[in-house]
Image: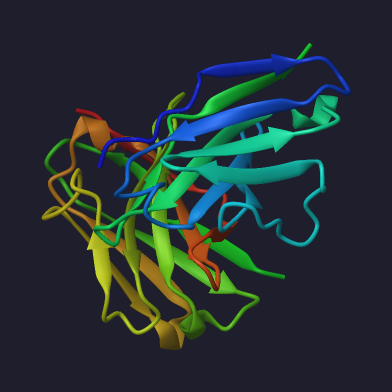
Length: 110
Length: 118
């Protein structure tokens, strides 16, 4: 159950787009369309942003989008805003019937 | 409004036990699987354990298998985590998490802090 691999940090200027990658294996990310993404502000509980690779829950801005290719999933934030500065985690269902999170990415808005 | 309220955290010595509870409200508890996710201080999220709506399917992370036991009481809208043989590496904020209709974690509690230290 190794953690999925994410870049430690990604930064961008307001209005720009950024993409966070999440790399796993064929036993998790590559094997199922059960990848989700979570946003966590300091001292707060995580918040669901994307589920089933590319679906947005009600109330989540359409500036957030998800995709997947092979064993790598991606989260794109377009029109970057100051409020998007947070930690982001991907998660995937696995072939063992368990779940695994990514290592986490700190997004900074310059 | 969905609410998940954890309790039971605290300071415990290595090797001892602790039982976490999660009180759920605002949704039909026995319709959904529930999970525990933890976060060590300054670290990332780690999935710990999950239980199906009817307690038939239970899964654990390798790091806690054989030491932790997840359970639920649908009559009381409550989720539990019995933690035995605690180690310093179990020290973390433990979140109670509702699984959505797909395989996402759609609602999270605020967490209860477990500190393992002599």
